Amino acid sequence: MVKRQFDYEQRVREIREKLEELNNLSSSMEFDLSREIESLEEKIENNRERRYQNLSPWEKVLLSRHPERPNSNDYISYFCEEWIELHGDRHFGDDTSVIGGIGRFNGQAVTILGYRKGKDTRENLQFNFGMPHPEGYRKIRRLLLQAEKFQRPVITLIDTPGAYPGIGAEERGQAWAISQVLMTLSALEVPVIAVVSGEGGSGGALALAVADRLLMHSNAVFSVASPEACASILWKDLERVEDMARAMKITASDLQELGIVDEIIEEPLGGAHLNFPEMAEKLKKALEKHLEELVSTNRRELLEQRYQKLRKIGEFRE
Amino acid sequence: MIKNTFSRKKYFALSRKMESEEEEKRVALPINCPSCSARIAAEALHRNLMVCPKCQHHFSLSARERIDLMVDNGSFQEIDAALSSLDLLDFPGYQEKLEKAWEVSGSREAIITGLATIGGHKLVLGVMESDFMMASMGSVVGEKVCRAVEQAMELACPLLICSCSGGARMQEGMVALMQMAKTSAVLGKFNQAGLLYISLLTHPTTGGVSASFASLADIILAEPGALIGFAGPRVIKQTIGQQLPAKFQRSEFLLEHGMIDLVVERSQLKATLSSLLGLHCGHGDGSYARKRRAKEPSPCPCDGG
Image (cartoon, rainbow over all chains, first blue to last red; front, side, top):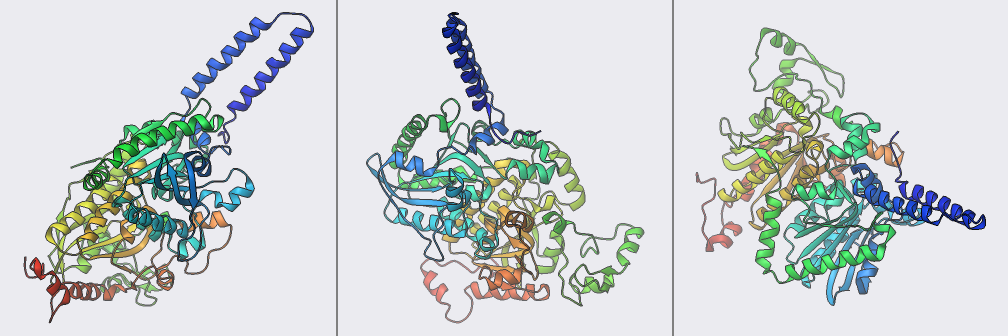
């Protein structure tokens, strides 16, 4: 049976509650169990550390989709003293699954763009589960060109299952909208840093991942299609989704090895949602470092490096 | 559903020689049109460019057949023919699939690229091969597209890519997905160079190919009835839990929604391409483009350059 939820923390919590009960019991019965209890607690903590060092790719998929995982709104409010969200694609509508706007990051005006998931059903419906329509990609492109005009660096946050597969999305040119963003980003004349903070699902996620630097959270995943889709298409067997997640090489360390990811941002023990301030601070520091490097790079060199980085991706026999 | 759209029966090879009597016998049998069920003599279908004479259903073509159909006789010179895929992720079953695809399609990869002339106009051409792993895009497709674009820039001549694809090749994981970004970046340069790119979408063009190089052309043509879109119809149907409208994601539907320039019947394809190429080559009386570019005079590539 394939795990659909990462419930390890819950089990740890249950064991801790039991220990607490035992502790209370021992004090009321005047047995001194405190040493045993302490050593058990230490064991739990050690076990927890080991557990998180040995997460399977599929467990990372589940963690990256954790309902409490910090979303783009959280990061933006942590990063920016000042933030103005901007709306609309100027063609059809405003796609709320994409957040975009101007903020002050470390004293510097930047454009931030991100896919946005909700944390509960109401928010998820509001943000369409983080799955953009073409309007989302057109808003992205509009704000990218705006950033270029005003020479603002761009930071992107990637956390989406993918572009929305619906009738309206196809009618209004999902493929065209995504391709335009890819081309625009590949030659945008300002520094671009992309962060895979959660789920990077397919081409719909890729649209924000064309950048000078690609950072990735240690439990985030980025894949050509969801492991579920690949397992059902290639193996006709959804039960083998865990094997598929492994075969597809979708974790941050796999992608760093493949030369796609530049830096991994280590998550706090148990995942980004268990200690958001620590997570956000680490990411902020990394962004500051990269931004400083990129801002001082000559514009032509910056574009050439980004281009060459993209141009050489791929392995083949000749 | 996408997969079924790729399962093309070999009715009649336009260019391949009949290898045995048995095959000759098989192809000589009349063929049922999958669209109108009419029985068509193989010879008649062949003469009609693999288009049903009754209902105009366009049968799929192999890359070689399509090249023969479009370019001036004998003008095609393949480039980068030796590029072939590696099982870079050690993905279960990929090597076997590649070997099977080499055998079935007779091609090394899911795209053939080269130089050719159409109506005397020199151009760089890429044609995707539907029989090769559903013409999915992995490293080799991405690289060959990029090299074709670069070749066209070097020669300062137009580029034509005929797409059909199930999307990024899952067996190459993120490296395959990144080919979308790579081809888009190279086409960005091509666009800056002021050169013409024509994209022809054929049945079916979906996923990562539709959301990258196939959509980034100056002029987008499609064959009648081709399925074109980002998400496959089965996924959409599952997601929304509704029946899809008739003709949804077909060429005519996309034309209506403003996504493509023209739906071109196969019989008109070569003439349309020649005309488009001619209108862009800077020939003719008082060409504005030519005068504008006169500061850096470069011969028109169709002047036998």
